[in-house]
Image (cartoon, rainbow, N blue to C red; front, side, top):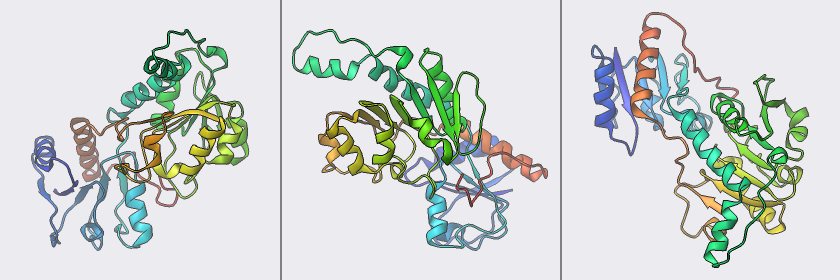
Length: 313
């Protein structure tokens, strides 16, 4: 088994070491420009076109992340990047779900208990008790009911607040009021106090966090975006904050990363910024999952996590 690896800005030696330990019989190498030698599998994150194009003997391509929008965008811009017969396989939950639940729960509880406002009062040296938002009406809407979204929704429901979930196709999740499809989108949004975005980034979901979406939420709602920066229409967020339709936002992802120093988000005190760290890829868990799936493919078995190229996830 020959494995080709590419992950820019990463400790490639550590990844290769772990793959060697998990698959001692495999031949592993880090891809370098000009490398056209054969391989059975490619393990990648944001690979250049020349790494994959024309490799029709690949048995599968493993994307080192749950989001595949970057590699699919490359295929869209330069058709033929992805070999025709090699399935693209994304990471499923490899320790990301607990991290995401921690991040989102912290942000939601911070807004419900108004800790963001207490921080402002502290800066003004003001001693003043604020009434917490009523738990029973502090409705949280989670956009995206995949593995991460479902886990986050259930973690939030454990705190006793109403939780809704929205997905493209119908799903049933204990303790969550679910909505599906375009026909139910407005009903999902109606009266939501905190909107959490965990949608995959596809042509259908780009710019979904826009003025129209914000207008359907409860007055003074909150936004938490932990999916992709391309979901958010940035001027619409600033306008919604200025008008009071949104009270605040927590953003972990942005259209341009790192966020440029002159970006207006830095100057908006109602926006909390984190550097795309809500759920980090864990190397050991990821290597174990990929190695197990490679072994299964070599045995002729089917594996989960195969991306539908047309749907984008």
